[in-house]
Length: 389
Ligand code: GLU
View: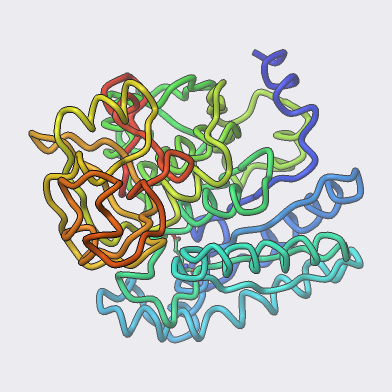
């Protein structure tokens, strides 16, 4: 076991560390001693030449304590207001904690929309790389105060998976307030067993994760496991561990047997395909016939207008759409070369007819195979890959 960990961790030079609200906050707001201890460990790792990007929750929980709310508000506007109060305290606490070790920090507040567009995605990436070059610790949170359903990452577990892909990090460490991933809820089942290693996230595993909720954060264990699966599909391992345990980060990086290690997939998606699949929000749906289904899934071909049966939603050129086949089978996600109205006009036609019908032609393909991620096999097999979660 230690050997596997050592092998996987030995070359990690850049990692994303996600810390949940349950680790960062105590009854009376932010837990400064935990934050200081994490800062110490991150600085020690940075001194060893490992770049760390921190994804930190805690804005809402810290805001709640500051305002005097005893339970997490249900209304979105109250959550956003609490986050607005708490985010500044969170950053002040980090400035102070990292400052003790002579390190500077930077705040990045992101929405899903920021990463949806390739240019903005690349821009965020360049900013992050510049910060790392300057040896500054980037601290990322969701921009809670402006988030609405359509531009939400949902939770910071998901955000940390996107950031891992964005920054080409080679490890995600997800620090929570339990020891890792158990087969049952350890708070209610005495016989719950901690899994040390997960090779594959299958349906059974997701089912046991869904029974383990979190108190303060948004996601609970299920969203951590889903994030680990997304990261694994990009070829990157995840360790879920207890952020309240002493020296936990150092021990993770020194390959101690702590927490649960999720192994990466041996044949990962490239970063761009990972972005298409997990970061972009599909704007519509295209249903295809059996011939196209077979060409896409079995032969890795592009999607031509001739195989299209129907088009749903409003999308523009460059947007992501879901592809489906008869019986509601999901085939994958791809970036379209034509907007929805034009796809409706050319569906069923041959590529040579596109120009005649539309009066122009971008490409022969409605979706080029380079911009297409097939998920059909993943859904059928053991590795459960949910397109949109
Ligand atoms: N962005 C939220 C906060 O800072 C946390 C969301 C989460 O824990 O997943 O409070």
